[in-house]
View: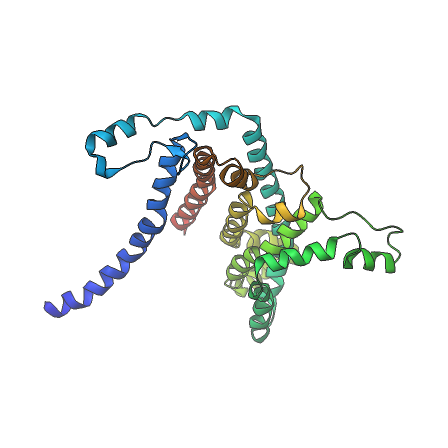
Amino acid sequence: MSGRRIFTRPARIAAIAPYLWMALFFLVPFAFVVKISLSQTAIAQPPYLPVFDIGRGWQALKTAFATLSFDNFRLLVSDSLYLSSGLRSLTVAAGATAMLLLIGYPIAYAMARLPRRWQPVAMTLVIVPFWTSFLIRVYAWINILQHDGLLNKILLALHVVSTPVVWLSTDSAMYLGIVYSYLPFMILPLYATLAKIDPALLEAAADLGSSPLKSFWLVTVPLSLPGVGAGVLLCFIPIVGEFVIPDLLAGSDTLMIGQTLWLEFFTNRDWPVASATAVLLLLILLLPLLIYDRFQRRQMGRS
């Protein structure tokens, strides 16, 4: 019995460790953000009131809790600035994710159809961009897209255009930077799903008279839907809160929710409103996660 206890104790610790990690590094900081979102802006240090002070006793804490309000959340749903930046972020994320899926699916499909010995090489080529700093890669695109950059030089040399094209500080540059930066996040889950599809299923479809295109739509695409869902979530969710790429590549008239958060925190010093924006954004982004989880459970139930 003692031997079994010694054996199961590390297993229990290993099972509890992820929950402890999430509680310590996500739930506790998120609780602080929620508290700040319910506070009021103040010219003080820190720039919000009330500030909980355990040393003042329970009565002081009760008074502080009583002053918390949802005024910041009411401001978010009534101010056009936050509504427009939030809608802009969702629109950009949806469009960029659709582009990523259209580009990433053929690449992942081609990787899965490669001979086994070449698949690790293709995987390495997809992962190689991660070896360079994300910020450096975005700055590289600034040099490529600027007025006398590499892209305009190539287009002028090929006589595609007669004068340099304005690429930088446009939505095109922003979408290009987002698609380039997040493409591996779309390819990897798609490839992992497509590589597991049994070729015998496609052979069986061909034996039953199905054309290659029809086999692709009726066999490959349905079986790859879990990878599609994972890739879409891995791209859509971080793109919604993206700050660096829109700030460096897009125009000044493009204000996404990540830039709004930056302005509220560091320029306006309005921590309560910025925290309320972050909390509301997190709650909105939980919706696609719940939909994907329900889809996964339904798929497991069918299988």
